Length: 208
Image 1 (cartoon, rainbow, N blue to C red):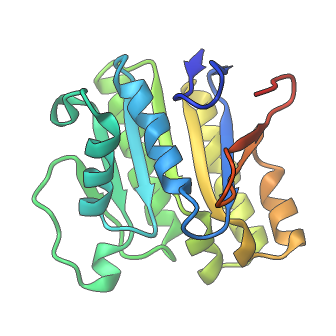
Image 2: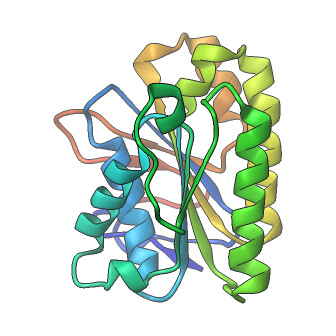
């Protein structure tokens, strides 16, 4: 079982679960995702971040902040950066980071993610891995909902196959109800975030 950070009343999730974190911009969605990863790192779980919004340097800084007393540099952490090359940002000389040309390159994202997850699960022997995808909204800027749905179907299936935990961020106010409904079908539950209230999780069979 995977435990969640403080604020979720001790909720534990089955291996293979994927959650959608949905809310407006600047409502703390990324922070919740990083906190989920940091909670796992404290007990030895692997942590993988696929970022289509912030560059790797910002993600690493955010993870270090969330990790608190955990030695973040010694943590099994990997980042797939889909932003820096597109924006012309200098790439880090950090073995934990791999790069994809842009959020539009979903094939490249899938390859880099699969290789990283395989390294953690098979090569390093990490049986428990947590994955943050930040964010689905960037994918929907370049591709239609049906294409993104198919990509995420494979992506969440990969997480399920290794018994991982996935958390995926989306800006709910950027998409119409039909798009949100299509995307939500892929997930076992939704963490709804608003600016002035505690996050609320909807998961069949679980109350928080």
